[in-house]
Length: 288
Image 1 (cartoon, rainbow, N blue to C red):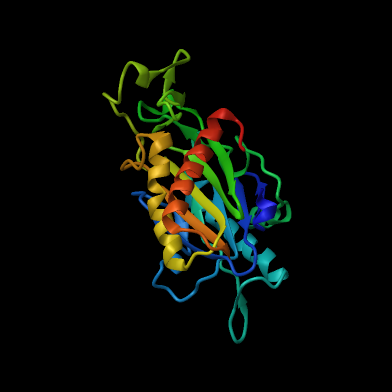
Image 2: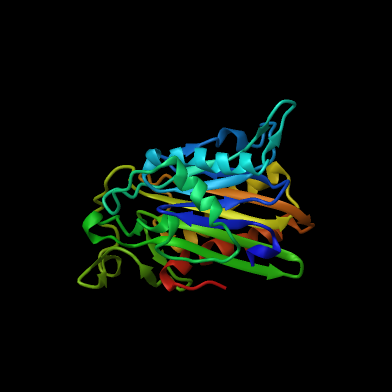
């Protein structure tokens, strides 16, 4: 499905890179209380630069941000970036998850470059790339965690395509459309929330993050990308319980290729569905 809108995704070690087609417009919304990031300021709707060339999603917390330099190196070699009078400047917003305690990897600049080299239209979900060390259901304590990972879902309606790449490393449990727990805090193979609904929250500060990247060919301005990211909070809340706690560093990106005119309110509803199903795909190990 990614080939229909031109976005590519590649993985190397515990990082993933989304390479954007030419003239991609993007923005973001962050409801996280402890996000780790780079170059997000450029994506605010009041800033001059509109285009996004790639998104880096990485584990290893702030140490993983060095991989953005590898992505930049790849883009420079391919003459991709924001055109200025004297030099082409790659625009690579980046966001991290905290996966220490599960993985102990020393990130390198070359990791980002290698992820770009592997980029294509095929999708693999689960314990791959930035999702390698992701865990969920940590509200009862780290010892009761369940596996998180990288998710994906895509939806087509006439000429419209909406896809979502999700990195689920949350405090909360992943829940289905019917409210049933799919992945979450568990003991002896039983989900704790079935009998103990968040009565004793024992968290490690700043060790949780859900990252969402919405990819679409809908024609959106930078401001509309921001608004769509903000509205997509509801898609996350449908699939993660609890979501956006004080201990999550969540960020939602929206990237628009800008080809198809589509009603914005309808697009918001479709996108919320796609976001929630992308998160659930981590637990179901399948996508559309």
